[in-house]
Length: 72
Image 1 (tube, rainbow, N blue to C red):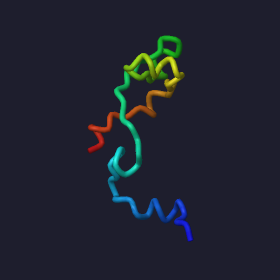
Image 2: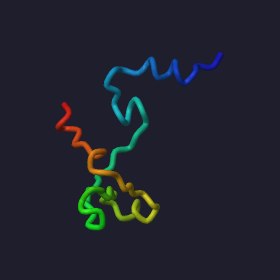
Image 3: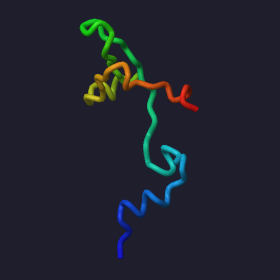
């Protein structure tokens, strides 16, 4: 019987490695406050321009952006 996704998640360590355990490829990002919303929103862009051409960007409110090193 195939494993369910729930079972697969239960087998991960409490702090999974993004690449080895989850298959995520980390990239460098730039965070640019927007001027149209008075700096309340942030434009998140990849530093690699080739990724930008593939529509890889996010617009998020400032409260959604957290520096992970501050959370350790």
